[in-house]
Length: 154
Length: 154
Length: 154
Image (tube, rainbow over all chains, first blue to last red; front, side, top):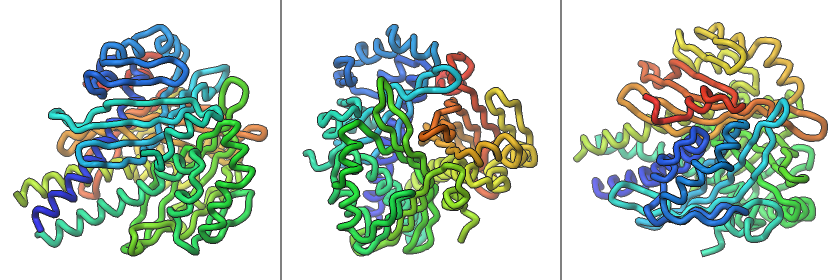
């Protein structure tokens, strides 16, 4: 019984840790915390940003946050809004799927300038869960973007 | 003590299962997985979509996703964004309230074409939690839509 | 072992309670439940709303919901959309950071009229977790708003 309870507890903790990790992305990005964003990822992780190429490794991921595109967006006024993910746990690996919306200040309001599908691949490390790959693609009608959200894909 | 712990664990698992179920709706809808969307619902469930009538049963719910309105929206580029729900557990039944926003691609950005209140009624089945009824109503000033979000309603 | 399990369970319950509390804000606000919104806060809590001053105490917080600005927004059609928060637990205190977006009905769609950073300070009370302070600031390029989301701040 105690063993079974420890196992159920761990499944809940894993899901909580993964949700927490993804919930941190937006606040870290919008406060310009490049090192904090990079630390969500494994050292050799890949972050493929729809329409903007692929960042490989923590230094490249941090450079996205410290770079001119993101800095200009922060100065304009922006929000990286992510939804609560659908998480599939497989032992020490996991996949999570969610939407992200980037709002940018425009006139008296904000405009959704990026609306994307996101597939996160995660792994349990000695320091807890981290992201090994994040694919982000614009939901502009592209089937490749829709496929990221498709749980029928292996 | 062990019994009390099992009970607390189960309450957390119930809430996690319900949140997970609702988190799956958006990715399933935006990847066009009609059978996956239908499987979130009980066989005789009702899904009342604000301004678009009522779908009763899994085949009718799947037809919403396979139908021309949803398929055209997917081709245009869309995202069904749902917020993390406020969940009220009552034994083997539950209610959950959240917002949903449908973004559609327009010009160089995306526009919020539907912003709705959602009330989910759920039940524990032999296969886990499923939705027995979902009411969705546009937040266009209508008091009926506001009432869906009102936890003072029984 | 049993003690360690009770402790892990309580950490999960604390996080669940805080997430639930924040998930209730939007539905309570958009159903005009002023007393319900006020009850999320400690009796002497402060809610500082970006660009709109500071409400101190439950009566003042309820007055925000019952007041003419919020009532006009409800009549126009609105949604207070909050993201799932990043939560930092410190015993009987906690901080949570998230985004909020207020959509208002306009023409045939909805416009994001407020996009904000939110820092929630929470405390465990005899009645469960409640909010002791919420700071909300518009993400219009202001560094003060970005700072609310910055977990490097103490």
